[in-house]
Length: 131
Image 1 (cartoon, rainbow, N blue to C red):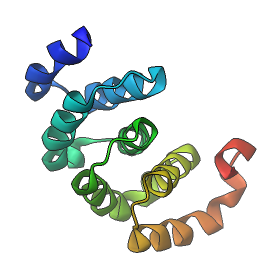
Image 2 (cartoon, helix red, strand yellow):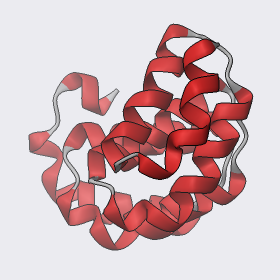
Image 3 (cartoon, rainbow, N blue to C red):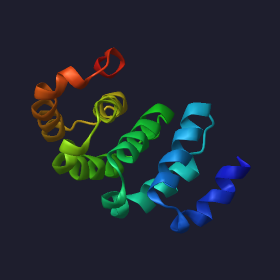
Image 4 (cartoon, rainbow, N blue to C red):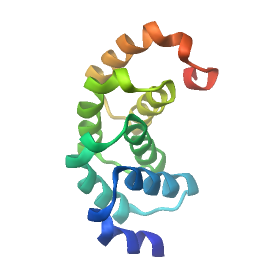
């Protein structure tokens, strides 16, 4: 809780990787931090164009894993990810679609674009990325 409290007012200084690492760590540890997640969602939405595909995927994954509703963030991730799918690695695809499905956020345009991008690249996927 102390880390979340200390991080929230400093988010404007975070780089994209800092955001995704922070929410990933809280989600992975199972530590509730709703105020921090809400602040991160607000701060990253206009900055998602700076995120790598992995950072986009991990951020969405963290919000879904933590059970933190963030419909505006998910909408922004979908919008940002769709035209950049050619840069996604197999695990990025898997984490992104898993996050949307787990969060219960419909993203038919994103899912159709993922399906189109992934089909010719299925040979690149490990069993874990296919699961």
